[in-house]
Amino acid sequence: AQKVTQAQTEISVVEKEDVTLDCVYETRDTTYYLFWYKQPPSGELVFLIRRNSFDEQNEISGRYSWNFQKSTSSFNFTITASQVVDSAVYFCARQTGANNLFFGTGTRLTVIP
Amino acid sequence: DGGITQSPKYLFRKEGQNVTLSCEQNLNHDAMYWYRQDPGQGLRLIYYSQIVNDFQKGDIAEGYSVSREKKESFPLTVTSAQKNPTAFYLCASSNFALQETQYFGPGTRLLVL
Image 1 (cartoon, rainbow over the protein chains, first blue to last red):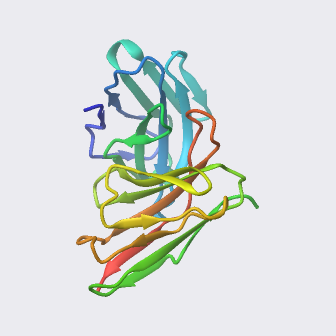
Image 2 (cartoon, helix red, strand yellow):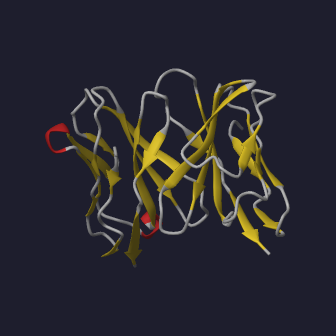
């Protein structure tokens, strides 16, 4: 099966610490997209980033950064100087050619003030 | 404001009853999707539609039905054949172009009485 694995079920950090959420995926496709979504307590999934399999450049957006390594099939997400508002469940997902998303089981991040 | 709306926020179903969850979008997206989320798990695809009057089964379509009569609307019916319907249901939409980003609605929580 072409899985998406988020091995960290729950992580707790103290405010202002940096935290990295891991994502490892399997795929037989040469072209694919990877995503990260945030699910706050309200339940709605908020889109964070979409990355093409041909683009291995790391990306930074404010306190968020993403490290895509095709050689290890990983797409890790780092939050720098975490804040309480970052507390949520974060999902990594891979998209197939039919536009369907396969999600990991999520990592629950708790930022302690 | 453009976006995706789902109603109701909470829905209660009695044994043997069919219930319908509403999903509407004003983003002019061609494709729409229904996902189911169980506690501690990622999202799983129920049905998707890439164009009006056409839809395909996802990974867990049994016990569910959909229609796509209008571009803006993609209602999901949870039938009495779905033996374990208690879950959080999320609707999403995207442009039809290959592997475009899916944007999600706020979700409907379905509970069985």
